[in-house]
Length: 296
Image 1 (cartoon, rainbow, N blue to C red):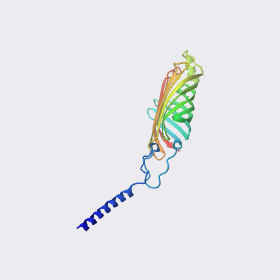
Image 2: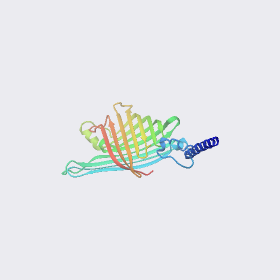
Image 3: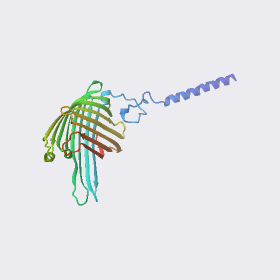
Image 4: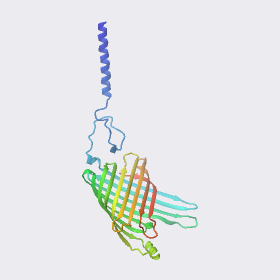
């Protein structure tokens, strides 16, 4: 009986040892189950092979993006209208340097009845370029230049030059949250039709105007998800020479992937000018739904 008891104990120990060895064999290789950084933008993890070395922090922030968007609306019958919107954005980041280029155009015509001919109701074109130089500790210096032509704001050209200092609370390849403080030089060239209208009402205006303003801005960009991207920014400009002149601009867009490189984007833009040209409303807003194609 003692011999049988010893054999049983040995068999039992061997069985537990086999289970333990099998369990260890099925465990993944060390390091493969580490949590992926949110900035990777992917849910999958490697299941075999060697663990690759993480990129250096500066290289991990490098990104190249190029997106084109277009949308439109047409209606006929008792009322007629047609509108179109288009935009493009390019951003490249290499270590401490970032360049952003953007352009957009919006145009629309409408007629309230079949007997009337269509008239232009929306017409504006805009472009912007910006360079950021990232410093230590989340700080950056930047310079930006933008141009706007808007028929219904009475502008042949609005040129803005914006140097300043930015602080990035979050600075990743796919996500950025930052605030800006700087100076804004605004140079307006006004439409002659609006100047003539103001003169006829006894309120003559100059053809050009220069405004010097302080500028505050907060922005957020999130493209962590493989299917959704959120961009928003709020800007406040306060004139320093004539304090009655101040403006607020707000933009927000949500992009959702639909197939391959194609996405659908909903955007809203609000512009408020506390002291516009005579006869021009101080608030303009534009909402759009566009098809977006990501080239890079």
